Length: 187
Image (cartoon, rainbow, N blue to C red; front, side, top):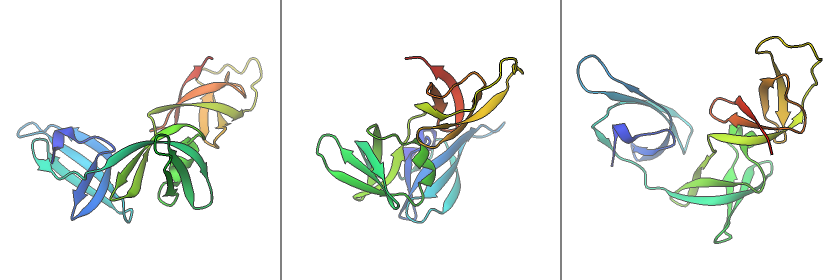
């Protein structure tokens, strides 16, 4: 059991015997009464979305899951392929339902896989990830409009708006929750 106040994005909860993963969580404190957590969850089995309002002191049933740190190998048409670095066990994770994560996965990097009843239900993408700029248009000296941005493409195919001074081959830090440029990374 987990209290409403302890629910965070990525928490697995059981509702109606089905596992749901929390995709959004917001706390609200009314003028009178107890604080509540507004939670939006996605079903791991069918992708349906469920919204709940949970008093922060109320307990709800959480799904017992295992988390394995695995190395991302590659993706084919249907699956992401991972390998556990300790046991060398292979995991095939269906791309369907997780298409948006494809551009955040980098080969040979480690990610936490959430497993429920011997099935991978989630790939934890770090909050911030370093990418190499694969495609970028050069700007002309003098194009110095304050806050001007241009789209670039990373080595994984992710498109991000960055400041004009970012060049091809440079490394940038990206916030994976908002898909926004954070800063240039110097090696």
